[in-house]
Image 1 (cartoon, one colour):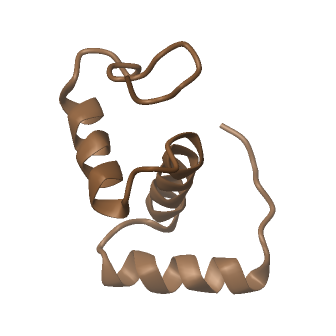
Image 2 (tube, rainbow, N blue to C red):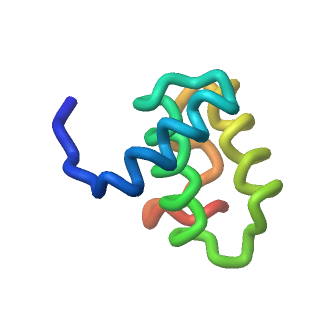
Length: 74
C-alpha cells in the first residue's frame, strides 16, 4: 500500500461519489483507477463493458483472466 497525492478537488469528488455509492473513499478511488486503467488498455470498450469485465475478473480464480500478456482483453 502506498500514499498517492491528489488535488483537493479530486478528493472532494471522491468523497461525494463514495457517499452516494456507499463505498469508502479508498474503495471509490480504487474503482476509478481500475476503470480508468481498463479504459486506457481497451479503448474500444464502453463503461458497461468495462464494468462487466470487472465483475468477471472478480469471480475468476485469477486476477489476469481475460487479458493477454500486454493487459489487453483477450
